[in-house]
Length: 352
Image (cartoon, rainbow, N blue to C red; front, side):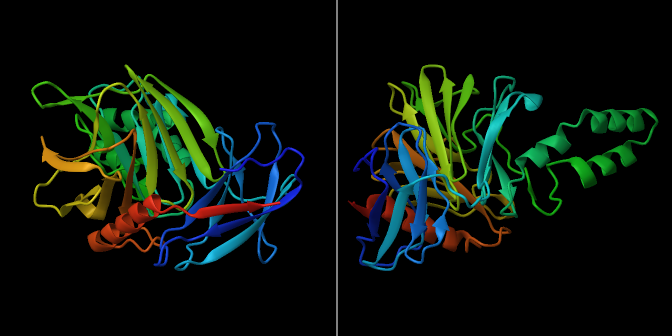
């Protein structure tokens, strides 16, 4: 990638779709910038200001609409502070009030990674979203409200367990959909929806426990990045706005597999070229993908062995409106398009 000069006040960036087919998944343009704390304003060909972000690893990023076959889009960048305020479209933080979980989301999907206080769970948990709003803070606040749990306990002691459970489930529990989504996915001692494991000498999966530390590297408005430390390994996860997929870079000395637990062997599943996909209960759709990755089924899991240190995991829910993913067929179409675009990224040209 070209580096923007510290003295440069404006430039033109041209993004070209190298494919002979339309891109159906929106892209994020990335260009390297100096590590000098400067801010940048990005506008499109119409002169409209776009949301942008400088990431921890020195990239200026901004969204690009899904381009037609061989189509181009021009953007203009200058130094300065963006006068237009854009909404935060990603979020993540540690939740010490809930076993030190690290949970994160964008406008489409949300995940829980089990923290140091968790016991007996290994994989990635999925929150099913029906809203494009950021809602994790709200869910955790209700679920972890001490006054709520105290009231529930008092009602139970008074012999009104039925009323206590009704109050909790209908108003507070994040295991119940109150209109925006819920946590209905089961993880336990599995990989859940996209975590990694190692294979022992006997071929059996060796699951990792919960993470030890979680450090937020980017927190929006367009990209969330977190560095997670585990015994003898580091994982860097990042998610962009408007994407169903999470990028995972694993720093480890051992070959690893990524996977999805299959709760029901009769559910829809597939091993495509470079991806695995599964449909869980209530229309939760899950996937892992890695270019040139090798797939298999073992120990109740769909597994993929990445060819490099990077893979992607993601999910969708049939009840979410706005992403066009309504069933397992459309989920596979999304994955194929996403994988194709990873292999054929936008061609970026920078002109001063």
